[in-house]
Image 1 (cartoon, rainbow, N blue to C red):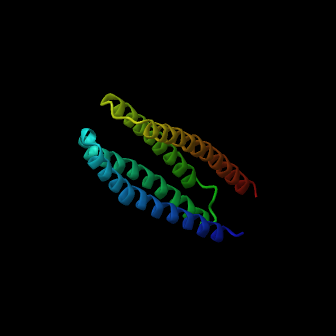
Image 2: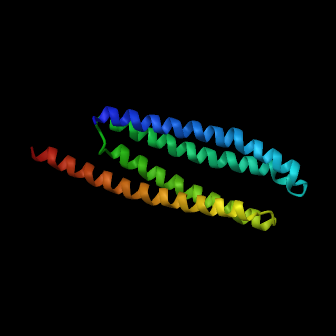
Image 3: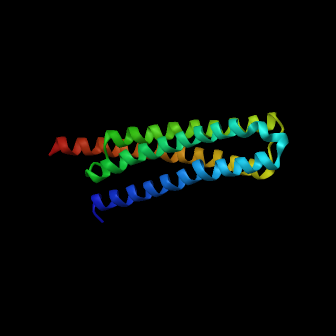
Length: 159
């Protein structure tokens, strides 16, 4: 498989994830939040803060997707091991750590107002775990891509 073809596949997957995220964050979450506001009037005060929280999470997720899109563009230009890709993976790692902190803050916030349900708690703990896993993988990729970039630069100087 050629670099351009790999880049097209990765971009297609990224677009697919972006579309699924749009359906999740901007269709399903508001719909379920509206139903919960109607079904649980004691927790109705969480409707707007919950939607805002969801949009903050969405912004972080789309920032990660944008950074990955830039990596895909570099791969398409046959520059897989570049300083730009290493920096993009480092930014992805940072964004993922911030997302993990935001997820954890949501858990603390819901616990503080005594409105956390077991299913929501499990989902949010899983989201913290996934965010940290993405952060670790992106940091490792950043390091490896940068080392490969340095080796490539050294080999080009010796030729």
